[in-house]
Image (tube, rainbow, N blue to C red; front, top):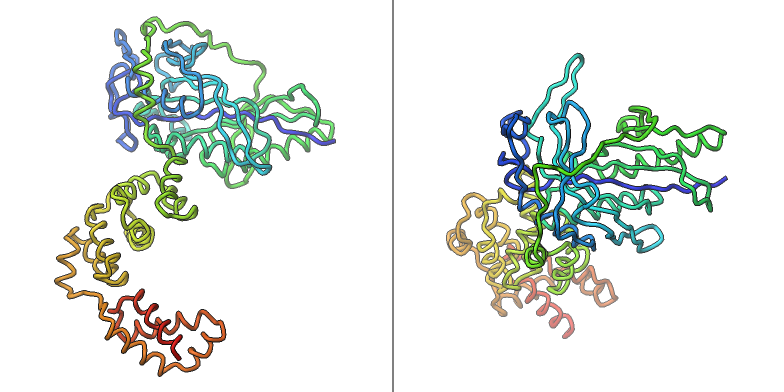
Length: 474
C-alpha cells in the first residue's frame, strides 16, 4: 500500500522591534538573563499592556507579502493555560480575528512551481526562556513579551523537500522585509510541523503527529522524511499511529517521543479586556505596505538589470546585510561588476578570515566605489586595486591617497605594451602555434607572460587587444 503525507507547518517569527509586544522593555538577543524585564513582563498586579505600533506595521508588511487579506481592526484575545514560562497564566494572542488570513506563497517543488496556501498570520507575545537542569529549571524573562507573528499553513505540503522550501521562503520574506533576522539557531524563527499519513486516494486525514521546535531548514526536511518512514513502517505492519508530540534528535537523525496526546487542550479563549479593539485606517495599512523594503525577488531582478548573472545575484542575496551593503555600492549604477568582484572576493575573504560581519567592515561604500572607479578607468589594475584595499581595511583611507603613497599606476602606454607583447611572442613560439590551432588557453598564457614581464603594471585589456593584433599579422 502506498501512503501520502499531509503536512502543515506553524512558524513562529520573533520580530525586530526596539521594545516588546506589550511593554516598554528593550527587545534584543544576547543580554544577560533577566535584565530586559519590566513589571508587566513579570505579571505584577496593576500593570497594563500597550500594543507595539511597529509590531503591527511589521505584521501588515508580512501579511501583504504573503498575499493575505488584512484585517483593519485589531482584536486581541487571552489564551489561558498555566505553564512556568507564562507568569500571567495566559498569553495575549489573536484567536478568531488574525491580522492576516487566506494567503499563499509559491515554492519550487520537485515537480515545478507549487502554491502553498496559508490559513492565517496572527500576532502574540513570546514566553520566557527555560533552561532545564538535572533537578531544577532556570527562567530567563528577557524573551517574555517579545513580539511574535505566527504563520500557519494549510496542509498542502507533501514531503520534506517541499517543507524545507516553504520554510526557506518564509524566512526569506521576513528577513528581507527587515521584520526579523530569521536566525533559527537563536530561536528567532521556530517551526512546529504537523504530519499525518493516509492511503493514496483517501480523503480522510490520518492521525496527526506534531514535531516541535525544529531549529534549522535542513532539520525540517530530515525530521519529516524520517517521520514519513517511521509512520509508513507502523502502518504497513498493521500498527496504529498514536497522537503525540515528538522532537528531532540531531545526533540520531530521528524523531523522539516527548509526550502522548489524549485530547486537544481547551485554552478557553476570550477577548483581552485590557486592550480595546484598534481600528487601522486604510492610509495606515497602505503606508506600512508602501514603506516595506524590496523583497528578495525584487532585488534579484534589479541586480540582473544591472548586468549581474543569476548566480552572481543569488550569491549577494545569501545575506540580508551583504545585499544592503551592495545596494549602497551600486546606488550610482556604475562599476557594478567590478564592485561585485571586490565585495564577493577580497572583502568576503577578509570578513571570513577576521570572523566579522559586513556591518563591522570599516571601509565605507563610497571609498570602495572610488577604488572601483580607479580600476574601471584603467588607472590601476585589479591586482593593484587589491593591494590598495589591503591598506584601506586598516583605517578606511582614501584609495587615491593610498595609490599615491604606494606609487601604483597601471601602464596603458601602447608602445610599452607592444614591446612586452613582442617579447612574449618571441619567447613562446609553441604557444603561438597552439593558439593558431584553436587552443584558446595558449592566448591566456601569452597574456599572462606579458603581465609577468611588466610585473603586473600594464593594462590587461590593452594587452589582449595588442597581442591579438600582433598574432593576426604573423
